[in-house]
Amino acid sequence: MFDTAASYGNGEGEVIFSEALSQIENRVFLATKLPSSTQDAGRSVANNLGRLRVDNLDLIQIHGW
Image 1: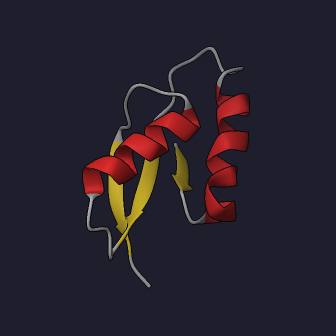
Image 2 (image 1 turned 30 degrees about the horizontal axis):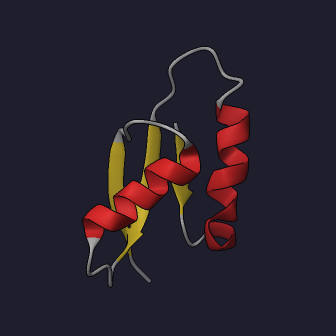
Image 3 (image 1 turned 180 degrees about the vertical axis):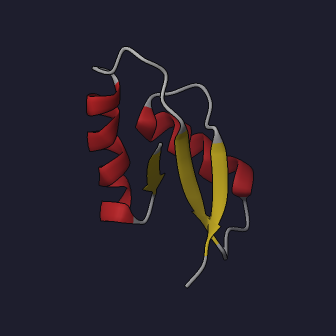
């Protein structure tokens, strides 16, 4: 399982992780987090998918602090 969030490195963490993910041949369990204040969750998820360069996520969590 790999856990990401747009808040890690202002989204850059997901971009960097996507490069490593593209080298993994086996299926991984991929989780991400949305900010608790997200007004447009759909757009946030679409942005996560784009930065990670994947078609789906296994788990979406609410990032609370």
